[in-house]
Length: 168
Image 1 (cartoon, rainbow, N blue to C red):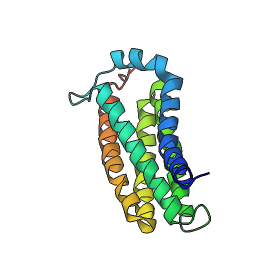
Image 2: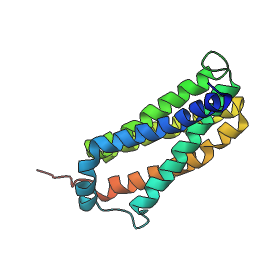
Image 3: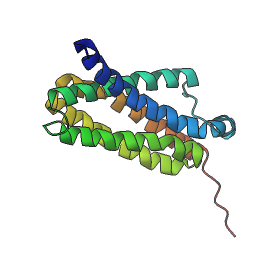
């Protein structure tokens, strides 16, 4: 294997991994997305779906590349990269669970709780990545900010669509 392939393979794999997980989560619930979107009351500051998809592609690619930098700089899974990459894995699992929770189960409250977990693990991962590779840590800043937006957005959806309480 030549040296370009030895470098490009892990970089591409690191970028593809978070995107693949996001795509699979969406693919599993895709038939629920349109009918659900048509029934919900959204905040007036809702982004168009194409913009949201483009943002996720960029964010997943950035954090994926950051994971490569940490893996490379931190000596793989046995060196100083072990804890940051473990936190990153937890973040990805929480993130990938969002689509099935929100669109698959139609549970905006549980999705909001999941976003809290995503945000906590994203902040922790960004901090730990920064300890190993500063650029990798910085790559988490847009992701953390976007998750703050997603949390506010999900909260508004939860509040705007809360079922009425019926008193007997």
